[in-house]
Length: 286
Image 1 (cartoon, helix red, strand yellow):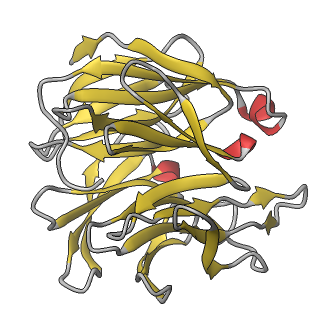
Image 2: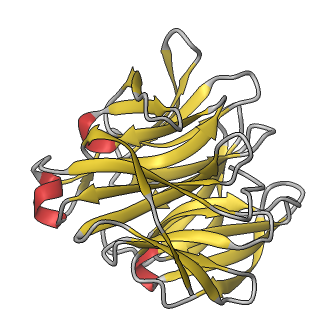
């Protein structure tokens, strides 16, 4: 396995999530500070929007930004709001889906070019029977996958036929076939033995880059299940989420954080974005 070097792009936030390459910039959420940022490859980070606990990001065909918001976990384990899918039309916020009164949580999100949104849906902190919801542009939703263990990080290959998602608590990447109506079928394991697999993106060869959270490294796994490359973060940093972007989509952006489970709950985290040039460009969605 080849090890690639990473260079710092920007820092100065808490914990970044949901990176997306959009209109020449990398966008990402800072869940714990309630902010959505973008940065260029040079690192000129700017604040785009603010809302309570933003996580997954994506854009509708009309240019509206969708934001999935993450719950808080109470001392007794109950999941508390905001738990909303929001849309920002460039001027103001609108609520597309509101689950703030339920003991559930939303997290990462994948929005397809036709406006379908796939949402991680957690039904409790244990991750024993989580789902993926499919939300239409008018806010109607249904479950398209179940029996998952803390799904996180999603991508669809360039041909639009394979859907891949990390199952963090199973340390694996799971694949599905994508049906014409957006349903997911033929569940199988794509890659295994990935310690706390978190964020994910896909390249033109159908390989995935996966953040292995507590290992502090991002691993590329090809379609044979073989690990071919890795990018290591500075010692003791979480490896959260990757995204292939840049003008030629050969810049691998990686989001890490100097933190631990206790510090993250106290907002004592130091997030950063890094970049690495790779040979195989990004493809598919996002």
